[in-house]
Structure formats: structure tokens, C-alpha cells
Length: 448
Image (cartoon, rainbow, N blue to C red):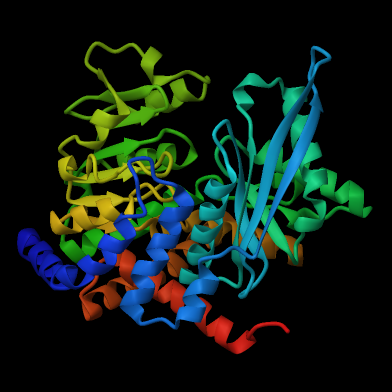
């Protein structure tokens, strides 16, 4: 029965593959072995715009960001030396509401990466039909090399530099790679001090004690689970009998691994930045989470039954569900032919290039796209934002109920359109998200 349902789904979807080849070939030429995320995000828009027959003016508009801010962040280090870091904040679209998107601290952050991430945030918010736009920020720094005092000074100075770029009615940041509730608390405090009053709604992902929401930390993982569960119901696939591989052991990868482990699935491999652990009978996720929370790397975990493997080898393991939950550009044309799973559940933003996407489709692998799969984080961030605005807070039961309602509804819309138009889930998700932006563009027009 499972094989028949998957075959029916894949047959309907793959009918249109040949029709998209000319479009994809044009997009592929823009992509090198080292894919620029901004080029990748723009290529995705081109592919879907062609499929939709979108007006060229709207396509041109959506491929550009509204505004980008680059700032220098001078910090006096603990040893008395001056270091100057570079930071960014980008608004892709505020057509449907204030910008929304995380802030990441990472040594390789650059403007084009932040632009791409802002674009993907726009699609997430639109797909979930939230009254928000897409934004993103980052600082080019390795936070692991900073003391707590240096990290706080960096965060506060960065906030001061983007002060007029953010706000509850303009752009609401949130945690992302290497940032957390404490960093959000420093941003909120710095912004509030400049405004002369407490403004908890300026960021989400804050500590609960100063206006944060319950369920925010686990939101992306919960959203991943709700979407995966919905697809498995369609395919008559029992999650408890599934073998799962997770790339990334941060907030997103850790939570989805824990959820699936607790319900009985076998998480046979898991990785962090140093590499991964593999055991064909499944890893003990509870033990590994405790190890991670001591700030320890998986490469240093000792268990004779576990095999240490590279992140590259982890992606090509034989499994039912592969969850890339680390960074972008992990599945490319170089390794896509070696992917051996039934479902790719995108926990990270942009982990699959357009070229790899076509290969996976051709090989019968169903990809649940990032803008749907990992949208649980922005969904609960929206809940936190409206709780702050109204000064009325919800319990965890309401949070999870509202999250499931919104994200499952989005999945059903995507799945229905995918079947109707015989396209992949990614194309269907983009068609829905872009159509809402296109309608907003049409209604608002161009000023002046």
C-alpha cells in the first residue's frame, strides 16, 4: 500500500519534470560548485515565476531586497585591544507587514547570505499567511572565541547601529545560528534604553521572564514534526518504523531528533560541526543531548558501538527520512545522486540547491521544503510578538494547538496544489507564497 501511494504521488509530480528542464537549465548555469545563496534564492524565484506565468515586473521586484544595512561594530576586547566586526540587517519585503527574521553570529556570514535568508523568511511568512514580511541579520564573528562580556558588548553595539532599522512596527529580530534568548534580552534592553521604556515586542525568542513565549525554543522542531507527520499519513508511512538521519545538532536538529526518538523512531545518525555518530540500531538521543548541553562535541563522545563519520558521509546513508538541519547548500548536484532516502525534511534554510532538487525529484525522493518544514519557529515567534503587543500570554497547550493548526493547514494547501498541478511540494509552496506577495504588490502599487 505504501509503495502504491508513493508511486501515485511521484507519478503525478514527475509528469511535469520534463517541462521544467529548460527553466532549470537556465538556473543551473548560474550555480557553481560553491553556490552563492543569494543566486540560489533568485534562481528559485525564476523557476516558480516561469511555472506560474508571473508578470515580469513582479518577478523583478521580488528578486531584489528592499534595503540592506552594513555596519561596523568596534569592540574593546578584554585584553584592551580594539576589534572591528562587520554586521548586517536586510529587509527583503515588508509588503505584507513588518519584517521578521533571525540574527546569526558566525565567522562566514556575509551580505549575500543574509539577503538570501531574508528572502526565504518572506516566503515562510507568506506561506503561513502571517501578516509579516521577510528580514534577516548577522554579524561576521566566531562567538565561541568571545568572552561573555565581549559577546554582550558586541550585541549591544550591533543593536545600537541598527536601532532605526528595527522595531515592533518595522522589523522584529529573533535568534538564529549561535544566538539565543540571552542575546535577544541584550537587544531588547539596548533598544528599550534608547526609547526610554520597556519594549518587549522589538524581538522574539526572549527569556520568558521578560516577555518571551513558552514553546518558542522547541517551535521549529515541533513544526518539523507536524509537517512530517502529515506527509507520512498521506503516504501511509509509520514513523515508529522509520530510520532517521539528522544533520545538525543545534536547536532545530536536537529537538526534532528528540521528538522522533521519544516516539520510537530509530535515529541512526546525527552530526554536529565536527562530524557525526552512526549506529544501525539507533542512537541514544537523550544521552547525546546531555553531552551536547555540556558544550561537548560529538567527535569526543565515547561509545564503542557508535561509528564516527563525516557530515558528507552522513548525508548519503541509507534511511527513510533525511533531515538536513545545519546550514545551506548541503545537498548539491555533487552528492544528490547518492542520497538514499524516501523523504528529505529540510530543517535548515536552503540546504538543497535547485539543481540537486531536480535530481532528488527525478530519483523519486520527496522533499518537504524549508519554507514549509521549518516555519514553526517564525510561527511561534509571531505568537510571542502578539502576546507582547497585547500583554496577555498563552500556555503551552494553546501554543502547540495554534502552531499545529496553522502549519498543518499550510501543508494541506501545498499538498493539494502539488497534486493538482503535478509539481513538487517545493514548487507548490513557492507558488502559494509568491502569489500572496504578487497580490499585495498589485494592490499596493509602486510609490510614487
